[in-house]
Length: 194
Image (tube, rainbow, N blue to C red; front, top):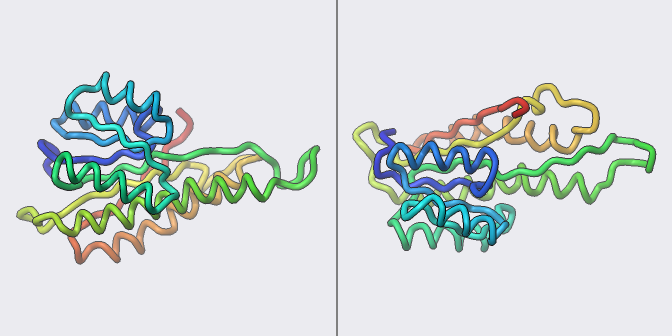
């Protein structure tokens, strides 16, 4: 996909990998929507990035929140061509530690944000991308999900994080197969520590 003049949604876009991704895409002529929970930081970052950046306060695991964010992007720029799912959280708890068994609440929260949130944004954004006119290659959009090396080599205390990122890896091929007929590509990256 040629990036010039495309519109990208970046979850977790107000900091870390998401913000670094936004900066790279902006430099290539892409308009970027930063989906993040932190309204104060997100608004400040979008203002710093300039007119081709938009902040939307979005909870990736909440359907209505993601829909509202996508509607704001479409209203401002007319659609979505690229999604980079960077939103994620971690936890450091052993399965059984000094204070007893791993918190089920923490495990569920990590799975909800990292795995369910990635799927939620992917499915809703893909539905928006399906409305795009295909390019000469039949492509309507690209989705890049962020897993982690922990999906394959989780360390002590990473059971929730590793499970969530393993789920992201596991859904990549079925998502790609499901969305291929719409002209939407799906890939997953698995960064190490940075």
